[in-house]
Amino acid sequence: RKEVEQDPGPFNVPEGATVAFNCTYSNSASQSFFWYRQDCRKEPKLLMSVYSSGNEDGRFTAQLNRASQYISLLIRDSKLSDSATYLCVVNLNTDKLIFGTGTRLQVFP
Amino acid sequence: DGGITQSPKYLFRKEGQNVTLSCEQNLNHDAMYWYRQDPGQGLRLIYYSQIVNDFQKGDIAEGYSVSREKKESFPLTVTSAQKNPTAFYLCASSTHQGDTEAFFGQGTRLTVV
Image (cartoon, rainbow over all chains, first blue to last red; front, top):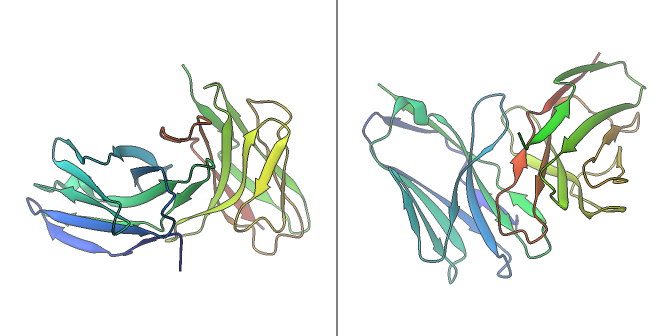
């Protein structure tokens, strides 16, 4: 089983739609969780950290479920500019960052 | 401005040659990482270092080597033993505690000709 797994997509959604991505992780000792966004041929950039209590940043909501070992990202009111690949990242307490393979989102007019 | 810098942005190498990719950070981060990304694929960990003079192999270390002589620098050498080196290489750094984000350089696109 991979340490971090994501549905690769692509998710093709119209503008204004709500879309959700899930990411599962295998190591229950994982300490920190993040969602990154990567545009084509660019470096990944932090979208948001994921806290145990869940957190929201504008149209984006992240949730963590430790019991089931998954994190989720919800995007409301999708914009064309949201089109990108979304990477799930898990940080073990040994400082080893583990990236998922990413989920590609394409928002169309 | 603090950040992480990779150079060069584009690199061409002849088969059989070693090549070194530079990664420098002035964020005072203890941990540094090298990832490889192939078209349409996710990031795969090559090597990582948590402290100066120490580093560990990642999932695809064969054909690569690194050094960590200074906290700020973590160069990656792609050796001739790497059978398929053409890829996008990303360097990242984070705090030792590991509970904060990782910062990435802009990447080096290596092409073997």
